[in-house]
Image (cartoon, rainbow, N blue to C red):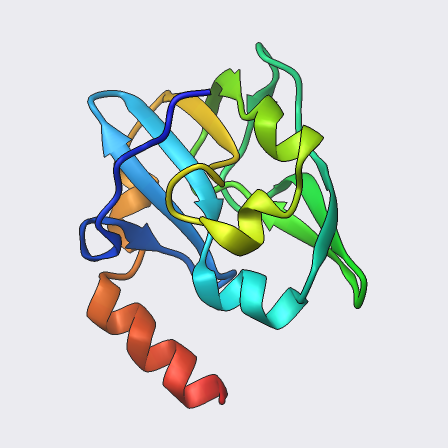
Length: 132
């Protein structure tokens, strides 16, 4: 899979510690550095199949670490157009590069409206500081 060049300041963030990168009507989803750090060593990732539909606010998969299993929550409604098989084969990519090689899925968005409710990088940093 090709890396997604990412500057974390250009992403949108959810309260679930996930990020979204918009490229036209395609939205790339992943978990944040804070999420992978909180989870610890990630050992398994379950993602939907290409063609599956996802709904904003609803789980589309799981990330399992040695500490816990965590749902990943969609931030957009749409159809899955790509799944990062590299992450499924080597889940520790999420620990090493959550904003690049560790992306999870790409979604063809029905409507980009739900992204308006997501946080900017600075807002997300404030949320993380409050939680610590």
